[in-house]
Image 1 (tube, rainbow, N blue to C red):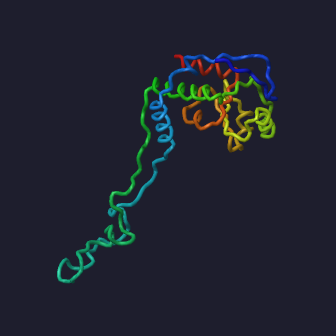
Image 2 (cartoon, helix red, strand yellow):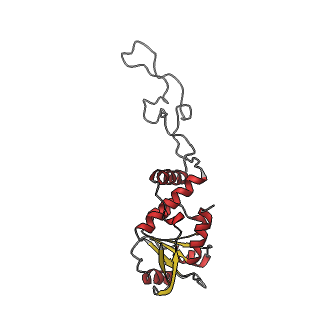
Length: 209
């Protein structure tokens, strides 16, 4: 599968990049994608939710009234879950939501996501470039030249560039990552996947192992 290479001005350079069918042209596995995205979202959860049980509530443990003879229901201490301000029964407790997946399954999920992007023609191959200093205006101009400023985009670099990253950090619809940090969630969440010429080689090398 061939894609034309464009520069930061949005013009064709005359070069073409052939994407490997072993990475960008496989039979997508939707279940692998589901598991990888589920793991990614689970790993984002802090799991610090907590409610107090009755043994953690501040208050007296004195029995409110005698067990029998009052005509009312039986009551223990004021910390009972029946009362406002009492302990909560079976409330949330801190926990770790993360779980493990095999490396081969995660690689299959990423290749499946890349295949979907290639089939839908949602990949833009950008000539390798550098920015001397962080400047959001320059990054916005590049997105405008590529005609993707109104879409969620994921720019994948061969190696992380601090200047490019800082230039995109304030933009809600743009995200910049290195080829080694791509994940299935970001690939699917982006409307357009922008790959630099160098990142294509890095992605194919890492996923073909």
